[in-house]
Image (cartoon, rainbow, N blue to C red; front, side, top):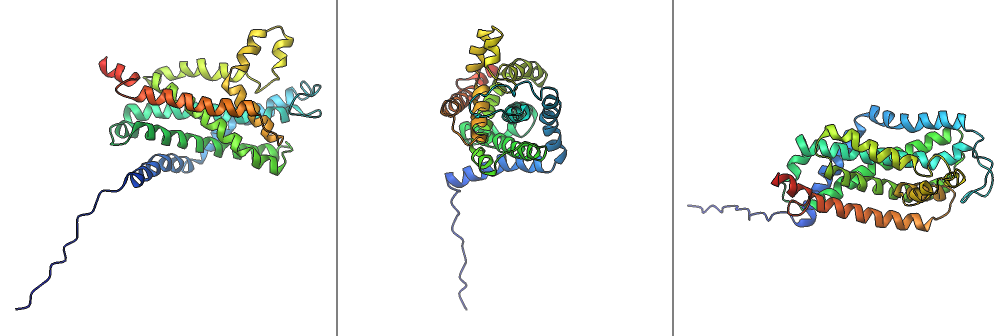
Amino acid sequence: MQSQTLNVQPPQSPPGKGLHLLRALRAVVGREIHKFLRQPARLASALVRPLLWFVVFATGFQNVFGVSIIPPYETYIEYKVYMLPGLLGMIALFNGMQSSLSLVYDREMGLMRLLLTAPLNRAWLLAFKLLAGTSLSVLQMVVFLGVAWVLGVDVAPLHALLALPAMVLAAVLMAAMGLVLSVYVRQLENFAGAMNFVIFPMFFISSALYPLWKFEEAGAVWLYQLALFNPFTQAVETLRYALQGQTYATGWLVGVLGTLFFFALAVRGYDPQRGSMRQRGAA
């Protein structure tokens, strides 16, 4: 009688922490990018707003701001050249808030409701959501930069390449602010009001559409000071300098520190032991 050997497979060990994080990264970021690429109308609708502002305002204010030379510009410029960094920042701002809206929806009835109960540190989960929102914003900003070039804005290819890190900085800063907003917006019905109190003041009290010295010239010194403390202003100025092949150190410092600060607030807010989530559970 011949003996038969049993081919017994040893028990497989659970995946390591790095592999677990990689799978979670692919699940969160890959899902958002795949969903976005499957909806080309979403990209078109995201570009309609800045494109409309670009066409209408660049035509209506063609020669309004071309009479002054302000840093980083060394000569007279067309208004559409001045507007471009502000509209790139607009894309990052609105997309960051849109990402927070989707986060509120997912937290209430979507995938995020399940992910919050998964055996994964919430800081990593929020970091992946931050990366997903940043990726979508940068993609839209790059496409709009190409559209602006087609419409006559002269952007040096090298400067456009050097501006890519500034786009990432602006996108991640706005996405981090969106994460903080998603902590305190409990229902989708309240999100429209929150956007009106966050997006539009940040956009209009900034250098996106007009130089800040216009505030001082009009006697609104308090608006000028408020615009200087506006993180969106610093993001726009960082983009403006980068598109001219220069570095705006203050904007980079504000962007990095602001991102870390807002992300820390979001992590604390989503911590069920300390933040807003604990208060909701107690309620």
